[in-house]
Structure formats: structure tokens, C-alpha cells
Image (cartoon, rainbow, N blue to C red):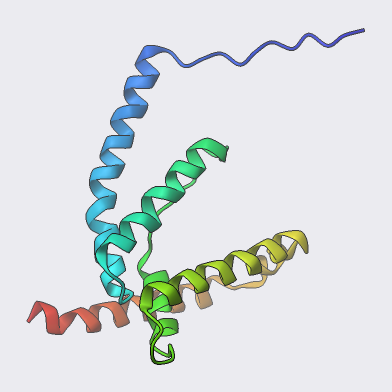
Amino acid sequence: MTANRSLPRLPSAATWRADLMAGAVVAVLLIPQSLAYAMLAGLPPQVGLYASLLPLLAYAALGSSPVLGLGPVAVLALMIAQALGSLPAGVSPEAGALVLAAEVGVVLALAALLRLDALASLLSVPALRGFENGATLMIAAGQLPVLL
């Protein structure tokens, strides 16, 4: 017996138009956001573009979730700035960020192999909220000199 497998249906023209419009809106919003987060992390603005647009293209080709949000976030920019603040002399921030990204990728791959996602359920909501509020206050305090 053979299974009756049909090919997936291609989206209609209306769906393509809606997807293209959504992609354009995301790109328009993502560009200034990625430039700002790169500067917050202490990197040149073009690094923010590379770090936000290329992963979206990779996810469009390989991903499967229609509701997953991808893009730069302020907390990550602060963590990168903290890590890059202790670079040895002679190492550029771009090279440090590249090594940091590779290291994080290896750690995340190992965590996925070891199925460590169950540890995330042990984090309490108040602890996560406190972390988010602390990061918000740090970002606001860091931007006061620029604002004033």
C-alpha cells in the first residue's frame, strides 16, 4: 500500500501580496532598530544590519514557525557591550563580536543536543520581570546623556 501524499498547496496571489507587504513593514521598522542596537552594543551601525537581516533570510529558508519573532533586542545589545568592554588591546569590536557569536552558537547547539530547554521552566516570572526591568533602567540611564 502506498500513502496518498499530496504536494503542499502554494499560497495564493493575495497571500503573496500580504507576505510581501508584511516583509516590507518589518524591514522598514527593523533597519533603524538594528542600527540603534548595534551602536548600543558598541559596534558600527552596519554590523546591526548584518546581524538582523541575514538571520531573517536564513529563517525564511529554514524556519517553520509563523509566529516566531526574530530581530535584535536591547538586552542582548547590553550583554554584548558588556562582553566587548573587556576585550584585550588590539582586538577590534567587530572581531570580538564575531567570536562571541560563534561561542554562543556552540553553546546553544550543545544545549539543544543535551535538551536543556527544560531549565527555562525553572525560571520564575518575578525573576524574569526583575531582569527585564533592570535592563530597561540601564538602557534609559545610558541614553540620558545622549538625550540631554
